[in-house]
Length: 452
Image (cartoon, rainbow, N blue to C red; front, side):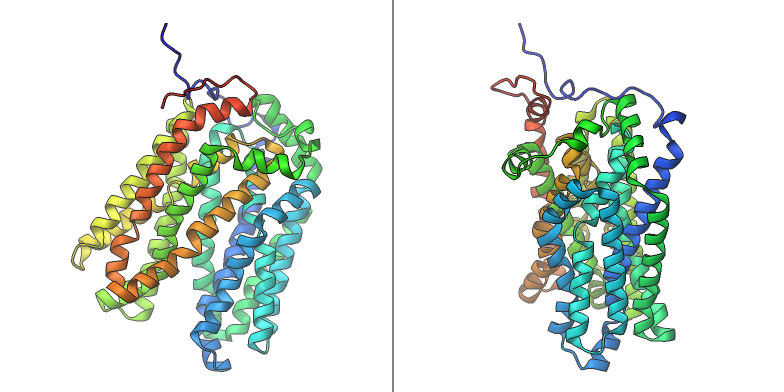
Protein backbone atom coordinates (compact mmCIF):
# COMPACT_ATOMS: atom_id res chain seq x y z
CA UNK A 1 0.00 0.00 0.00
CA UNK A 2 1.37 3.38 -0.92
CA UNK A 3 2.00 5.74 1.92
CA UNK A 4 -0.43 8.72 2.05
CA UNK A 5 1.01 12.00 0.96
CA UNK A 6 1.51 14.52 3.75
CA UNK A 7 1.55 18.30 3.57
CA UNK A 8 -1.79 19.51 2.39
CA UNK A 9 -3.68 17.12 4.61
CA UNK A 10 -1.62 18.00 7.65
CA UNK A 11 -3.20 21.45 7.85
CA UNK A 12 -6.96 21.30 7.30
CA UNK A 13 -8.24 23.48 4.52
CA UNK A 14 -10.41 26.35 5.58
CA UNK A 15 -14.00 26.08 4.39
CA UNK A 16 -15.27 28.68 1.99
CA UNK A 17 -17.01 30.82 4.57
CA UNK A 18 -17.18 34.57 4.95
CA UNK A 19 -14.29 36.15 6.80
CA UNK A 20 -16.46 36.80 9.86
CA UNK A 21 -20.17 36.48 10.50
CA UNK A 22 -22.19 39.32 11.86
CA UNK A 23 -21.97 37.78 15.32
CA UNK A 24 -18.18 37.79 15.14
CA UNK A 25 -18.03 41.53 14.67
CA UNK A 26 -16.44 42.02 11.23
CA UNK A 27 -16.52 45.80 11.52
CA UNK A 28 -14.67 45.73 14.80
CA UNK A 29 -12.09 43.33 13.36
CA UNK A 30 -11.41 45.72 10.48
CA UNK A 31 -11.30 48.63 12.92
CA UNK A 32 -8.62 46.75 14.88
CA UNK A 33 -6.67 46.26 11.66
CA UNK A 34 -7.06 49.89 10.57
CA UNK A 35 -5.91 51.41 13.86
CA UNK A 36 -3.06 48.92 14.29
CA UNK A 37 -1.98 49.71 10.72
CA UNK A 38 -2.18 53.46 11.42
CA UNK A 39 0.16 53.02 14.38
CA UNK A 40 2.54 51.08 12.13
CA UNK A 41 2.55 54.06 9.75
CA UNK A 42 3.43 56.27 12.70
CA UNK A 43 6.21 53.84 13.65
CA UNK A 44 7.95 54.15 10.29
CA UNK A 45 7.18 57.85 9.86
CA UNK A 46 8.95 58.53 13.17
CA UNK A 47 11.82 56.27 12.15
CA UNK A 48 12.42 57.59 8.63
CA UNK A 49 11.76 61.32 9.08
CA UNK A 50 15.39 61.59 10.17
CA UNK A 51 16.56 60.88 6.61
CA UNK A 52 14.71 63.94 5.33
CA UNK A 53 16.54 66.31 7.71
CA UNK A 54 20.09 64.90 7.44
CA UNK A 55 21.42 67.92 5.50
CA UNK A 56 19.92 70.40 7.98
CA UNK A 57 21.29 68.57 11.04
CA UNK A 58 24.69 68.21 9.40
CA UNK A 59 24.89 71.95 8.70
CA UNK A 60 23.50 73.17 12.03
CA UNK A 61 25.46 70.87 14.34
CA UNK A 62 28.49 70.29 12.10
CA UNK A 63 28.00 66.51 12.23
CA UNK A 64 29.96 63.95 10.28
CA UNK A 65 28.39 61.15 8.25
CA UNK A 66 29.35 58.63 10.92
CA UNK A 67 27.36 60.53 13.53
CA UNK A 68 24.38 60.85 11.18
CA UNK A 69 24.54 57.12 10.50
CA UNK A 70 24.61 56.42 14.23
CA UNK A 71 21.37 58.38 14.70
CA UNK A 72 19.66 56.14 12.17
CA UNK A 73 21.35 52.90 13.15
CA UNK A 74 20.53 53.04 16.85
CA UNK A 75 16.83 52.53 16.10
CA UNK A 76 17.43 49.35 14.09
CA UNK A 77 19.83 48.14 16.79
CA UNK A 78 17.20 48.51 19.51
CA UNK A 79 14.59 46.78 17.36
CA UNK A 80 16.86 43.81 16.78
CA UNK A 81 18.01 43.46 20.39
CA UNK A 82 14.73 44.08 22.23
CA UNK A 83 12.07 42.61 19.91
CA UNK A 84 11.90 39.18 21.56
CA UNK A 85 12.04 40.14 25.27
CA UNK A 86 9.52 42.95 24.86
CA UNK A 87 7.20 40.76 22.77
CA UNK A 88 7.37 38.06 25.45
CA UNK A 89 6.36 40.67 28.01
CA UNK A 90 3.49 41.75 25.76
CA UNK A 91 2.22 38.16 25.50
CA UNK A 92 2.14 38.01 29.30
CA UNK A 93 1.03 41.56 30.17
CA UNK A 94 -1.56 42.17 27.42
CA UNK A 95 -1.10 43.07 23.79
CA UNK A 96 -3.42 46.08 23.63
CA UNK A 97 -1.88 47.76 26.68
CA UNK A 98 1.58 47.01 25.28
CA UNK A 99 0.80 48.53 21.87
CA UNK A 100 -0.51 51.74 23.44
CA UNK A 101 2.54 52.05 25.67
CA UNK A 102 4.97 51.39 22.80
CA UNK A 103 3.37 53.94 20.50
CA UNK A 104 3.22 56.56 23.25
CA UNK A 105 6.93 56.02 23.96
CA UNK A 106 8.15 56.40 20.38
CA UNK A 107 5.86 59.39 19.77
CA UNK A 108 7.10 61.20 22.89
CA UNK A 109 10.68 60.27 21.98
CA UNK A 110 10.13 61.74 18.50
CA UNK A 111 8.91 64.92 20.17
CA UNK A 112 12.12 64.77 22.18
CA UNK A 113 14.05 64.79 18.88
CA UNK A 114 12.31 68.05 18.01
CA UNK A 115 13.52 69.55 21.30
CA UNK A 116 17.09 68.23 21.13
CA UNK A 117 19.90 70.83 21.22
CA UNK A 118 22.89 68.56 20.63
CA UNK A 119 23.97 65.30 19.07
CA UNK A 120 23.97 63.57 22.46
CA UNK A 121 20.38 64.60 23.20
CA UNK A 122 19.26 63.56 19.74
CA UNK A 123 21.02 60.20 20.09
CA UNK A 124 19.27 59.52 23.41
CA UNK A 125 15.89 60.46 21.92
CA UNK A 126 16.47 58.21 18.91
CA UNK A 127 17.47 55.36 21.22
CA UNK A 128 14.11 55.75 22.98
CA UNK A 129 12.36 55.74 19.60
CA UNK A 130 14.00 52.36 18.94
CA UNK A 131 12.95 50.99 22.33
CA UNK A 132 9.35 52.01 21.68
CA UNK A 133 9.32 50.50 18.20
CA UNK A 134 11.24 47.32 19.07
CA UNK A 135 8.28 44.98 19.53
CA UNK A 136 5.51 46.85 17.75
CA UNK A 137 5.72 44.93 14.49
CA UNK A 138 5.57 41.51 16.15
CA UNK A 139 2.87 42.35 18.70
CA UNK A 140 0.83 44.33 16.16
CA UNK A 141 0.77 41.54 13.61
CA UNK A 142 -0.11 39.05 16.37
CA UNK A 143 -3.17 41.19 17.21
CA UNK A 144 -4.19 41.42 13.56
CA UNK A 145 -3.97 37.69 12.76
CA UNK A 146 -5.80 36.81 15.99
CA UNK A 147 -9.07 38.47 14.90
CA UNK A 148 -9.28 37.02 11.39
CA UNK A 149 -9.55 33.42 10.13
CA UNK A 150 -6.55 31.44 8.95
CA UNK A 151 -7.24 31.77 5.21
CA UNK A 152 -6.74 35.57 5.39
CA UNK A 153 -3.43 35.50 7.25
CA UNK A 154 -1.08 35.90 4.28
CA UNK A 155 -3.09 38.85 2.88
CA UNK A 156 -3.37 40.66 6.20
CA UNK A 157 0.23 39.94 7.20
CA UNK A 158 1.48 41.24 3.87
CA UNK A 159 -0.73 44.34 4.06
CA UNK A 160 0.43 45.02 7.62
CA UNK A 161 4.12 44.59 6.80
CA UNK A 162 3.70 46.76 3.69
CA UNK A 163 2.73 49.57 6.05
CA UNK A 164 6.44 49.88 6.78
CA UNK A 165 7.13 50.86 3.18
CA UNK A 166 4.22 53.30 3.05
CA UNK A 167 5.17 54.80 6.42
CA UNK A 168 8.75 55.25 5.23
CA UNK A 169 7.60 57.17 2.17
CA UNK A 170 5.27 59.35 4.26
CA UNK A 171 7.98 60.02 6.83
CA UNK A 172 10.54 61.08 4.24
CA UNK A 173 8.07 62.99 2.06
CA UNK A 174 6.17 64.87 4.77
CA UNK A 175 9.37 65.37 6.75
CA UNK A 176 10.99 67.01 3.75
CA UNK A 177 8.01 69.31 3.18
CA UNK A 178 7.71 70.31 6.85
CA UNK A 179 11.45 70.89 7.24
CA UNK A 180 11.60 72.98 4.07
CA UNK A 181 8.82 75.29 5.22
CA UNK A 182 9.08 75.28 9.02
CA UNK A 183 12.49 73.82 9.93
CA UNK A 184 13.67 70.37 10.94
CA UNK A 185 12.22 70.57 14.45
CA UNK A 186 8.71 70.87 13.04
CA UNK A 187 9.28 67.74 10.95
CA UNK A 188 9.84 65.70 14.11
CA UNK A 189 7.01 67.48 15.92
CA UNK A 190 4.59 66.67 13.08
CA UNK A 191 5.41 62.96 13.23
CA UNK A 192 5.04 63.01 17.02
CA UNK A 193 1.64 64.73 16.82
CA UNK A 194 0.32 62.12 14.38
CA UNK A 195 1.56 59.31 16.60
CA UNK A 196 0.02 60.72 19.78
CA UNK A 197 -3.31 61.24 17.99
CA UNK A 198 -3.32 57.60 16.89
CA UNK A 199 -2.42 56.49 20.42
CA UNK A 200 -5.47 58.33 21.76
CA UNK A 201 -7.74 56.76 19.13
CA UNK A 202 -6.40 53.28 19.84
CA UNK A 203 -6.70 53.59 23.62
CA UNK A 204 -10.28 54.88 23.37
CA UNK A 205 -11.45 52.32 20.79
CA UNK A 206 -9.65 49.01 21.30
CA UNK A 207 -9.88 47.15 24.60
CA UNK A 208 -8.36 43.90 25.82
CA UNK A 209 -11.80 42.52 26.70
CA UNK A 210 -13.48 43.25 23.35
CA UNK A 211 -10.45 41.93 21.49
CA UNK A 212 -10.50 38.69 23.47
CA UNK A 213 -14.24 38.17 22.86
CA UNK A 214 -13.70 38.66 19.15
CA UNK A 215 -10.79 36.19 19.17
CA UNK A 216 -12.96 33.61 20.91
CA UNK A 217 -15.69 33.99 18.29
CA UNK A 218 -13.19 33.63 15.46
CA UNK A 219 -11.79 30.53 17.15
CA UNK A 220 -15.26 29.04 17.61
CA UNK A 221 -16.20 29.66 13.98
CA UNK A 222 -12.95 28.63 12.32
CA UNK A 223 -11.03 26.65 14.90
CA UNK A 224 -7.93 28.80 14.55
CA UNK A 225 -8.34 31.85 16.78
CA UNK A 226 -7.10 32.62 20.26
CA UNK A 227 -9.12 31.29 23.16
CA UNK A 228 -9.20 31.58 26.92
CA UNK A 229 -7.08 28.48 27.43
CA UNK A 230 -4.46 29.77 25.04
CA UNK A 231 -4.38 33.20 26.64
CA UNK A 232 -4.18 31.71 30.14
CA UNK A 233 -1.40 29.28 29.28
CA UNK A 234 2.12 30.50 29.94
CA UNK A 235 5.27 28.68 28.89
CA UNK A 236 8.52 28.35 30.76
CA UNK A 237 11.34 30.10 28.86
CA UNK A 238 13.08 26.80 28.04
CA UNK A 239 9.93 25.28 26.56
CA UNK A 240 9.18 28.51 24.71
CA UNK A 241 12.63 28.47 23.11
CA UNK A 242 12.12 24.84 22.13
CA UNK A 243 8.76 25.59 20.51
CA UNK A 244 10.22 28.47 18.50
CA UNK A 245 13.76 27.34 17.67
CA UNK A 246 13.30 23.60 17.17
CA UNK A 247 10.88 23.89 14.25
CA UNK A 248 12.87 23.49 11.00
CA UNK A 249 10.18 24.80 8.66
CA UNK A 250 9.62 27.92 10.80
CA UNK A 251 13.34 28.70 10.88
CA UNK A 252 13.51 28.26 7.10
CA UNK A 253 10.55 30.60 6.64
CA UNK A 254 12.16 33.24 8.90
CA UNK A 255 15.60 32.99 7.28
CA UNK A 256 14.14 32.99 3.75
CA UNK A 257 12.09 36.09 4.56
CA UNK A 258 15.18 37.79 6.02
CA UNK A 259 17.31 37.16 2.92
CA UNK A 260 14.61 38.64 0.72
CA UNK A 261 14.50 41.67 3.01
CA UNK A 262 18.29 41.96 2.67
CA UNK A 263 17.74 42.57 -1.04
CA UNK A 264 14.90 44.99 -0.33
CA UNK A 265 16.87 46.96 2.29
CA UNK A 266 19.87 47.24 -0.02
CA UNK A 267 17.71 48.64 -2.82
CA UNK A 268 15.88 51.10 -0.58
CA UNK A 269 19.18 52.46 0.69
CA UNK A 270 21.09 52.63 -2.60
CA UNK A 271 18.55 53.21 -5.37
CA UNK A 272 18.74 57.03 -5.08
CA UNK A 273 22.54 56.87 -5.41
CA UNK A 274 22.28 54.42 -8.31
CA UNK A 275 19.85 56.70 -10.15
CA UNK A 276 22.04 59.73 -9.54
CA UNK A 277 25.22 58.01 -10.72
CA UNK A 278 23.98 55.90 -13.63
CA UNK A 279 21.18 58.16 -14.88
CA UNK A 280 22.59 61.55 -13.89
CA UNK A 281 19.40 62.43 -12.03
CA UNK A 282 19.37 65.40 -9.68
CA UNK A 283 18.92 64.61 -6.00
CA UNK A 284 15.23 65.52 -5.84
CA UNK A 285 14.31 63.59 -8.97
CA UNK A 286 16.33 60.57 -7.87
CA UNK A 287 14.60 60.65 -4.50
CA UNK A 288 11.12 60.85 -6.03
CA UNK A 289 11.86 58.03 -8.46
CA UNK A 290 13.25 55.87 -5.66
CA UNK A 291 10.17 56.65 -3.54
CA UNK A 292 7.91 55.41 -6.33
CA UNK A 293 9.87 52.17 -6.39
CA UNK A 294 9.45 51.90 -2.62
CA UNK A 295 5.71 52.27 -3.11
CA UNK A 296 5.87 49.51 -5.72
CA UNK A 297 7.47 47.20 -3.18
CA UNK A 298 4.72 47.96 -0.66
CA UNK A 299 1.98 47.39 -3.23
CA UNK A 300 3.70 44.17 -4.26
CA UNK A 301 3.63 42.88 -0.68
CA UNK A 302 -0.13 43.38 -0.53
CA UNK A 303 -0.77 41.91 -3.97
CA UNK A 304 1.45 38.87 -3.40
CA UNK A 305 -0.17 38.23 -0.03
CA UNK A 306 -3.67 38.41 -1.52
CA UNK A 307 -2.68 36.14 -4.42
CA UNK A 308 -1.16 33.64 -2.00
CA UNK A 309 -4.33 33.52 0.09
CA UNK A 310 -6.43 33.00 -3.04
CA UNK A 311 -4.25 30.19 -4.38
CA UNK A 312 -3.78 28.52 -0.98
CA UNK A 313 -7.27 28.98 0.48
CA UNK A 314 -8.27 25.31 0.12
CA UNK A 315 -4.70 23.95 0.10
CA UNK A 316 -2.68 25.86 2.72
CA UNK A 317 0.55 24.04 1.88
CA UNK A 318 0.68 25.97 -1.41
CA UNK A 319 2.02 29.00 0.47
CA UNK A 320 5.49 27.43 0.22
CA UNK A 321 5.67 27.11 -3.59
CA UNK A 322 4.26 30.64 -3.85
CA UNK A 323 7.13 31.93 -1.70
CA UNK A 324 9.57 29.96 -3.87
CA UNK A 325 8.11 31.53 -7.02
CA UNK A 326 8.30 35.09 -5.65
CA UNK A 327 11.91 34.85 -4.47
CA UNK A 328 13.17 33.05 -7.59
CA UNK A 329 11.43 35.43 -10.01
CA UNK A 330 12.68 38.48 -8.09
CA UNK A 331 16.25 37.19 -8.22
CA UNK A 332 16.12 36.65 -11.99
CA UNK A 333 14.47 40.04 -12.68
CA UNK A 334 16.90 42.10 -10.60
CA UNK A 335 20.07 40.30 -11.65
CA UNK A 336 19.03 40.78 -15.26
CA UNK A 337 18.02 44.42 -14.76
CA UNK A 338 21.29 45.59 -13.24
CA UNK A 339 23.27 44.00 -16.07
CA UNK A 340 21.41 46.03 -18.71
CA UNK A 341 22.45 49.50 -19.88
CA UNK A 342 20.67 52.47 -18.32
CA UNK A 343 17.32 53.09 -19.91
CA UNK A 344 13.57 52.59 -19.76
CA UNK A 345 13.72 48.80 -20.07
CA UNK A 346 16.15 48.55 -17.16
CA UNK A 347 13.91 50.71 -14.95
CA UNK A 348 10.90 48.60 -15.93
CA UNK A 349 12.68 45.40 -14.89
CA UNK A 350 13.81 47.00 -11.62
CA UNK A 351 10.21 48.00 -10.96
CA UNK A 352 9.02 44.46 -11.67
CA UNK A 353 11.64 43.11 -9.29
CA UNK A 354 10.58 45.60 -6.61
CA UNK A 355 6.99 44.37 -6.90
CA UNK A 356 8.18 40.90 -5.92
CA UNK A 357 11.04 41.71 -3.54
CA UNK A 358 8.73 41.76 -0.51
CA UNK A 359 6.32 39.15 -1.84
CA UNK A 360 7.51 36.48 0.59
CA UNK A 361 6.69 38.60 3.66
CA UNK A 362 3.01 37.62 3.80
CA UNK A 363 3.47 33.87 3.18
CA UNK A 364 6.38 33.72 5.65
CA UNK A 365 4.36 35.48 8.37
CA UNK A 366 1.41 33.15 7.73
CA UNK A 367 3.72 30.14 8.05
CA UNK A 368 5.04 31.43 11.38
CA UNK A 369 1.47 31.92 12.64
CA UNK A 370 0.42 28.44 11.48
CA UNK A 371 3.43 26.75 13.11
CA UNK A 372 2.97 28.27 16.58
CA UNK A 373 0.16 28.35 19.12
CA UNK A 374 -1.88 31.57 19.41
CA UNK A 375 -0.74 32.43 22.94
CA UNK A 376 2.89 32.86 21.79
CA UNK A 377 2.21 34.52 18.44
CA UNK A 378 3.70 37.85 19.54
CA UNK A 379 6.90 36.13 20.64
CA UNK A 380 6.94 34.06 17.44
CA UNK A 381 6.65 37.18 15.31
CA UNK A 382 9.35 38.79 17.44
CA UNK A 383 11.60 35.89 16.47
CA UNK A 384 10.76 36.64 12.84
CA UNK A 385 11.51 40.34 13.46
CA UNK A 386 14.85 39.52 15.09
CA UNK A 387 15.94 37.28 12.21
CA UNK A 388 14.69 39.81 9.64
CA UNK A 389 16.77 42.55 11.27
CA UNK A 390 19.95 40.59 11.94
CA UNK A 391 20.07 38.69 8.63
CA UNK A 392 18.32 41.19 6.35
CA UNK A 393 17.56 44.78 7.22
CA UNK A 394 20.80 45.54 9.05
CA UNK A 395 23.40 43.92 6.76
CA UNK A 396 21.71 44.73 3.42
CA UNK A 397 22.81 48.37 3.00
CA UNK A 398 26.19 47.76 4.70
CA UNK A 399 27.08 44.73 2.58
CA UNK A 400 26.13 46.64 -0.56
CA UNK A 401 28.40 49.51 0.48
CA UNK A 402 31.32 47.16 1.14
CA UNK A 403 30.91 45.60 -2.31
CA UNK A 404 30.47 49.01 -3.93
CA UNK A 405 33.84 50.15 -2.58
CA UNK A 406 35.44 47.21 -4.42
CA UNK A 407 33.47 46.71 -7.63
CA UNK A 408 31.33 49.85 -7.89
CA UNK A 409 27.71 50.40 -6.91
CA UNK A 410 26.28 48.92 -10.10
CA UNK A 411 28.48 45.85 -9.71
CA UNK A 412 27.31 45.42 -6.11
CA UNK A 413 23.66 45.65 -7.14
CA UNK A 414 24.28 42.97 -9.75
CA UNK A 415 25.26 40.47 -7.06
CA UNK A 416 23.10 41.40 -4.06
CA UNK A 417 19.96 39.77 -5.58
CA UNK A 418 21.72 36.40 -5.23
CA UNK A 419 20.45 36.45 -1.64
CA UNK A 420 17.08 35.71 -3.23
CA UNK A 421 18.46 32.45 -4.62
CA UNK A 422 19.46 31.43 -1.09
CA UNK A 423 15.96 32.39 0.10
CA UNK A 424 14.46 30.17 -2.60
CA UNK A 425 16.51 27.21 -1.38
CA UNK A 426 15.42 27.80 2.22
CA UNK A 427 11.75 27.87 1.23
CA UNK A 428 12.21 24.58 -0.65
CA UNK A 429 13.81 23.00 2.43
CA UNK A 430 11.11 24.42 4.71
CA UNK A 431 8.38 22.87 2.60
CA UNK A 432 9.90 19.44 3.10
CA UNK A 433 9.57 19.77 6.89
CA UNK A 434 6.26 21.63 7.03
CA UNK A 435 3.86 18.68 7.25
CA UNK A 436 5.86 16.97 10.01
CA UNK A 437 6.15 20.20 12.00
CA UNK A 438 2.40 20.77 11.80
CA UNK A 439 1.76 17.24 13.04
CA UNK A 440 4.05 17.81 16.02
CA UNK A 441 2.26 21.07 16.81
CA UNK A 442 -1.11 19.29 16.91
CA UNK A 443 0.23 16.26 18.77
CA UNK A 444 -0.12 13.86 15.85
CA UNK A 445 2.31 11.01 15.08
CA UNK A 446 5.10 11.93 12.67
CA UNK A 447 6.46 9.35 10.17
CA UNK A 448 10.22 8.95 10.05
CA UNK A 449 10.31 10.12 6.44
CA UNK A 450 8.22 12.93 5.10
CA UNK A 451 7.85 13.26 1.34
CA UNK A 452 8.44 16.62 -0.23
